[in-house]
Image 1: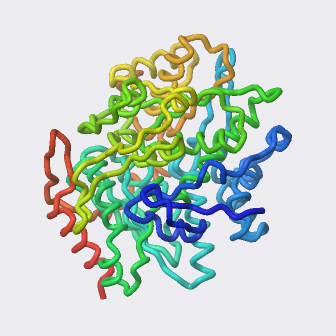
Image 2: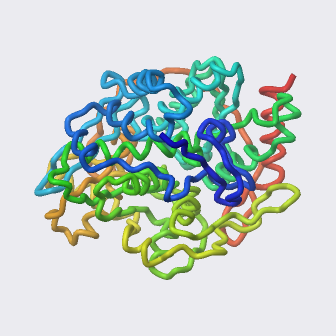
Length: 485
């Protein structure tokens, strides 16, 4: 089986193995690791049909093994995936709702978010490589809500890893925060004065700061990422649609996959699954009031605006990182213009080569869902079907309903990405009832928190918050206090 190599979306001359891409986190010139379309492994229709009824771990092996066969022995990969996706720890189900509409529930892992799936794979695959080499890594993660808890839980207690999570001060719920701040040990939760885009810019810049890593650890490669910018988080997200299809697919009929999207990792995973041969007719990308992507598909102009708050808090993203991978796959190039000396972002979302817009619009459609429609959708689905959706799942449902004009006669699946118990205030506002509190969340509500802070202010630029130099200096100082010798 041929090895799959990865290049930087900002430098296609770079050539990295999966292990190198995983360890580096960010590719050269602040790019993201991506594989060429022609190098994406393909699975035969017969192989896909045989997935019907198989376990999540078994399907994950068939999807991921072609990418990893040259670097991880088959028996080790089986062991990693059986551990990551044990039905006892992270059960997965597909529910038929009405006509030909289904919900893929990715909500019952340790932190009750779909991000548990990619985080658990990432943590175990990273630990596998580090144990073999005797190396250590500091994993830097920015979160808009659910990523931080999932990554922190997946990495908690691993002896070769420290985990630093940056989260926006006012944009996540208490329950999301406590999933990071109560773990302690090798997990350090950092509250940042700013929004998710500021946190993401901070993590990206630190990832590229090799002189800092060299100064702190005598190892310029010590920093890596567990955000969806990591190829170790991206690839396992291609498993979701394969599992969904294994439960609902018949006679190779294409399905419509509707993906509520923030940083576009789950959407990009679904794009990769289709490239691998999965029968996906259309990908519906649901976003909240941060409508840069649907506006781009409609107008052909990509313009990053100040992020807008929303009940779907994990999707408050105005410049999705994984858009760089999507645009690259369709022959274009988008990047963040940076100061060549400091790495500070000067201009976000610069599209200097357009993708094949005709193909992109043929494959993907995207809709924005207003804040009031979040609550209206939660009420409507509960009234009609007795189901409680969380705000993110509500975005997915409404986007699919818009695409299908309210007629669920096409084989389709909506990803439900978080337990509604993580958002009690929103459910109470929509339905007037309190959702059940998931057990781990109830336990963490009683534990003490440990919080570090970057309290200096971001810069306001063209109406948006931008990482300031003082914030970056403070973050570097914090890392020195945590890890300096």
